[in-house]
Amino acid sequence: MNLANIVQGGWDAVGAGDFDRVVADYSEEMIFVMPGQTDVLEGRGPFREALNGLGQILPPGFEITGLRNIEGDAEVVSIVNWKSSKITGSQLAVLFRFEGNKIYEERWFIDTEQWNNAF
Image (cartoon, rainbow, N blue to C red; front, side, top):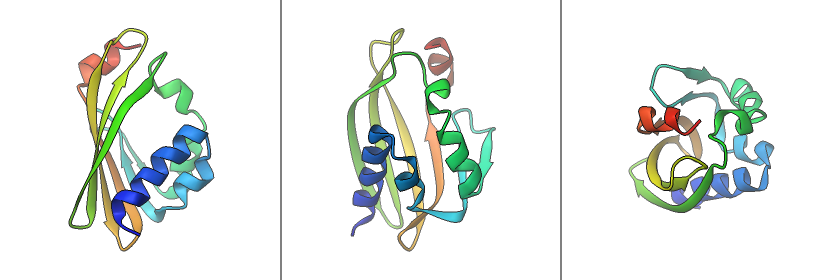
């Protein structure tokens, strides 16, 4: 399986609310770097717990309107088109770094001012 397929499977699992399937592709020692780059979750367990509150950390009316994955050497970048109740359309990027077939880092890049205004 190529790495872009692993990432796409994760996005599909998030859309289906199957968070156990999402975290199955992450290493135990993974890190998740949230928008703003100052908040970091460490470990698959805390990441899984955070997914339970996904609805509270996304802007009201958040919807992914387009998604493409670009695969590089041991990494995939997802370009995500999105909208929300207050934002008619925008993009963000998510970097996934791999060791073998497991994600060890997920890092979101987003206009944090726009993101905060979406709430």
